[in-house]
Length: 391
Image (tube, rainbow, N blue to C red; front, side, top):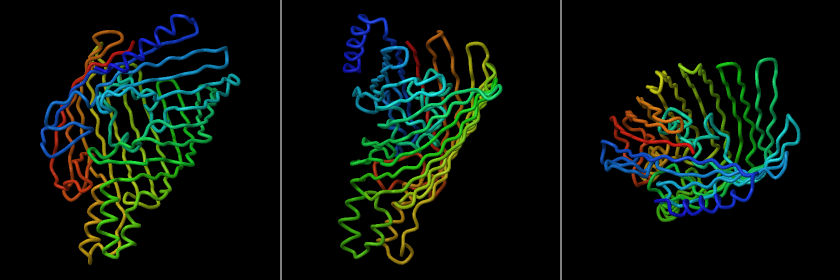
């Protein structure tokens, strides 16, 4: 399993043996998940036990070229990507002063509270962060130039990260089983600021970007049905190939005194065209540590608004286009109950039960193998297990 990643690990280890300037870190998750519904897919999980959804292994290596300049790379393989090893990070970092650090290269999109450590599942209490929020960023890596400023204002430590320029050209991953090609973003600009004070942390983020992507089944529907039917305005309303102006913003608040852990995170995405126009999502989580044990509970919600298709009430073909847009706009909520056990200083066992409540007539974070998913209501339960390791 993960043969290519193992080979990469061995190569990097052999290189690091010849330099004292190398720092090496790794993470591994071995997980399993299953649904109790045979018509749904959740992050690749179905009603058959799957080890692919959460399983991953990664290696991060840092080479300090001098006191100011360093190079950082991270390679990761996941079950969801057919065990392919990919370089997710590969950037240079230059510390200009105690206040400013500049970075350039392939790096993590700093969209959420746990973006920086999302691959290292050991660092948070869940098996996976609440997808109602984290699904809003179907891509996670960007080719960018950014600057990080740090400093104290009284007792508050502030970290500000500004993206000066960024692009993205890779696979999108937000519709299970749906083929998406030619995904890219341009003109990505943004800033996120984090405030740390005693046991509290707060974070705000604001970004703008232009996104385009080609959904194969949607493109076929436009070319084979809408255009021949003389409905170009309907085709334009659901087309994703043209540049979609997008705004992403959010806030987060966390309290952690070593025993009680409370986390709130809210995110919003607004799009000026295309089938999906906006999404609002949040979660509220609480965990309580009892020595090596940490039970936790999370409530999460996502609400989306689809484009209003012209003529949808009068023309059955336009009505079908409206159903497709509605199928992309997820509206659902969930409750997750979990238990974490730290059986080793660098390893944790996790168990989770998640109940996802779907509203009838609305799409949800659950998908099937179609751009026109079932809009049935009801509850789907997800059972998950994982072992997370840092090394």
